[in-house]
Image (tube, rainbow, N blue to C red; front, top):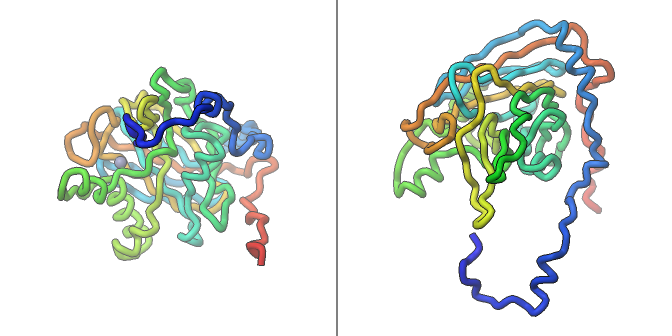
Length: 287
Ligand SMILES: [Zn+2]
């Protein structure tokens, strides 16, 4: 955090320097918004492939073939979910929340993409519908579906609680789920768990101190966020021990609810869609 009393005095032209207008790091002109209409139309013929109920304070994996949709729904009460995605054929390729944030901003919605990590950097999935898009940004700067948090984890909890051991943080839930899905040991699976899309979570940064905050999620049963898979995916979703994240997490104190993941296959892929191509960078790195 920035100090209340800086150790260094400001230069004479500090006000002028602070008044310089910001420049968007990644102008969106280079990343045109996808036409969602063919994707929404393809849903008319879809049939359900699978349905996965994620119990409170647990995580479950689910498989999504390329060209299929998956939908995460609130079913019994307000609940936040932590989402991981992997290339089903290569666990080394996984969701890159930091680049999603740099490209799309702090909170995602329909039309944004789930990008994969380097050296892959390509679309893993497209967000096709978000029933919480009405929320926008509130007066605190908060919004829904962030890529600014990481995932609640027992290591941070241990540090902050001076030795506490809690085993149902999203990090551990995702680790157990991936271990169950792949047969990897817990420690082998754990290194594949990565920073998440915080589904339904309402978060932001405080204006004064820039600290990550959370507040009660506006999600209601029936709300959903839906994705279209650009490659064969393994997904994992944790029903966060924070529940609606209105008060605490990393404990069994919050009221928690299950979440639902449904996978659908359209009869034919959306018009014009093709599986995610490899990134075009030649990887010679100047040598
Ligand atoms: Zn969590």
